[in-house]
Image 1 (spheres, helix red, strand yellow):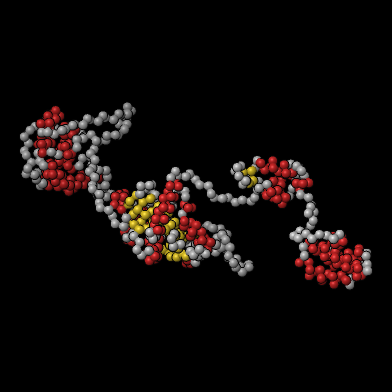
Image 2 (cartoon, helix red, strand yellow; image 1 turned 30 degrees about the vertical axis):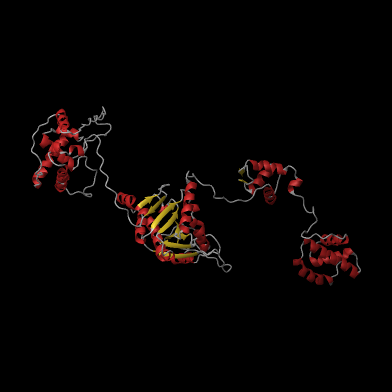
Length: 594
C-alpha cells in the first residue's frame, strides 16, 4: 500500500515538535487521532491513513492502529498512567510460581540481622544470587531479584558504627556528673569548654573525600596514592569548643601531639578569647576524652595544667569521659564535623590553607571558628618526675570523691605544705625514740640528733672517698643516688653511745637495731673516727661511762630499773639455701650496707 509523499514531511515536522511533551499513552492516542482525521479529510481508508501517520512519526503501524482503536472505543482517561491496569509483561515470580520459595530458601542461609526486628541483610551479591537461582532452575535477572529483595524487606545498607566496646560500670554515672557540672558552670556564667585533638592531616596534593563546584572538566588533580611525604609534613589541629558561646578555637600545630601542645592550645584560647569573654571568671571546666594527649593517665597533662592554672589564676576542673565514649564529647559533632565539611574536595597544600579553611567554617546555628598557627616545638618523651607529681598531689591537685582519676581540680595557688610524715621504723629493731634516752646513751635526745646532723658532711665525704678508692675513678651518675641506708647517722651515734656508755657488745647492739654484730661494731668504730678527724666534740652533758653490760639479760634488767620498756626483737630466720649451689634461694634478708 502506498503513502502520500507530500503529507509525510508536514506531519513529521509537527510530530517532532509534540513528541517530547507526551508520554507513551498520550503519544499513541495522538497518532490515532491524526490517522482518523487524515482518513476523513483525504477520503481514504483508515489503513492508508495509518500508513501515512506511521511513516511520518517513525513508529510501527500497530502503535497508530492501537491508538485509533482506543479512541474509537472511547478510552477512559487514566491520569498518571501510560497503560491500563494489568497491562504489560507479567512479573517473573507470577510466571514461575516456585521462584519466590526458591529465592527465600537460598537467602535463608545467607541472611544476617536481628530476628526480632525487621532489619535484615544478605551476604550474597545479586550476581551470585542470579547464578545460584539459575542452577536451581529459576533463571532471573538482577533487576527482578533486586525488586523481590526490596519487597521482602532487604535493602542496600552500609555499616553503622553504633556498637560500643566494653562499658565501664560507672559510665552513666560519669555522664550524669559531667552534665551536672556543665549546668552548674553555665548557670554561674563560668566558662565550659570541650577539647580534643582532630585527626592529623597530610599537607600536599592528597585526595580528600567530598565534592566542590568547579568548571566541568577542571577537577582538582591530586596524587593517586596517599603515601606520607616527609618534606611536606603533617598538621595536628587541637580544638577548644566553648559550649555556652557556640564558638570554636583551633590551634594548628606542626610538631607532635603531646600534652604540652594540648595545654598550649588551651592557653592560646584563654589569652585570645576566654579572658575577654569571661572577664570575672575564677574557674574553668574542661571536658575531654580519656585518651590521647589529654589522657587522664598522663602526668605531663596535669603538670602543664597546673602551670597554666597558676599563670591564669584559674581553678581548672577536668572531667574525662569514660574510656570508649569519646564520640559523646561535644566538640566531635559541634566543631570537628563542620571543619571536615569545609575541607571537603580540596587538598591542603600548605599550613596557611588549613588555617584559612578552619577559620572559614560557619553553620546556620551561628558557629564561628578562630584558627591560629602554633609553630612551637613539642618533642615527645618529656618525663615528669615522681617528686613533681607528689608535690602536685599534696598541694595542687584536688581529686573528687567520685572517680578521682577522671574528675579532679587544679588549684591556682598551692595548699600549705603538709606536715612531714615520720619515717616508718624498720621491722625487726627497737624504735629510735626508745633507744635515744639518757639512761642508755648518756646524753639528751636532742644532743644525739644534733651530733648526727653534724656528721652528715664528714660521713658523705668519707663514703665518696671509699667509693673512689674502690672504683678508681669519679662517680658516673648523680651523687647520692641509690637505695636509702638501712642504718642512718642517728643509728650510728646510738651504736657508738651504747658501746661507750654501757660497754654494750656489738652483738647485743646489733640485735637492738636489727643488724649484725659486724655492722654494729663497724658503725660505732666509723663514727668515733669521724668525730675525732672532724674535731666534733661530744656534748658537755654526756656522762662518763659508769656501768658495764655484757648480755641481753643485763641490758633488760638495767632498762627496767631505769623505767624503760625494752623489747628485744627476735632474730629473723636465715633463708634456706639451695643444696646444689649453697646460695640462698630467696634473698629476703640481704646483708645491710652501712
